[in-house]
Every structure is written in structure tokens, then in C-alpha cells.
Image 1 (cartoon, rainbow, N blue to C red):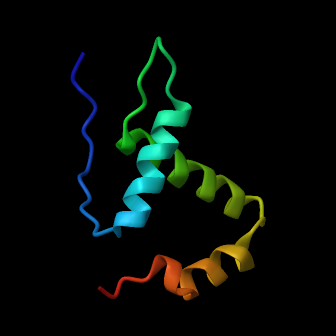
Image 2 (cartoon, one colour):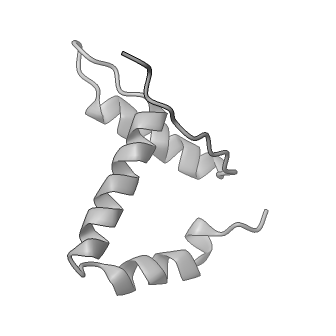
Length: 74
């Protein structure tokens, strides 16, 4: 069975965002299964897409993206 092809995406995140990502991966992990930061990102993408598909949190997400918390500027 061929391996599923995945696209790679590189993003620049702040130290604070990396710490949040690390903490989230740690909290989702269990002794039986360690969760990677990449898995957390994939989960977040799925959850956001699902919520937007249901019409939920649209304005909240826009407000977050418009704030300095998720700024692309260095």
C-alpha cells in the first residue's frame, strides 16, 4: 500500500506560539502515545474548518487574526 502523500508547509511562529504548541502536544499526549506538534497543527486545522463549516466562531477567528496575537509581522 503506497504511503499517503502529504504537502509540507513552513510557517514562522513566535516563541510564545511555539510554547503553546508544545504545551498542547504534551497535554494531548499519554503514556501510550506521544502527540507531535505537527499533529496538533493538523488537528487545529480540522477543528477550525469543521467549525467554520457549521458557521461557528467566524467573527471570533477573524478578530484573532486581526489582532497582534497572530501577526505575520516580525
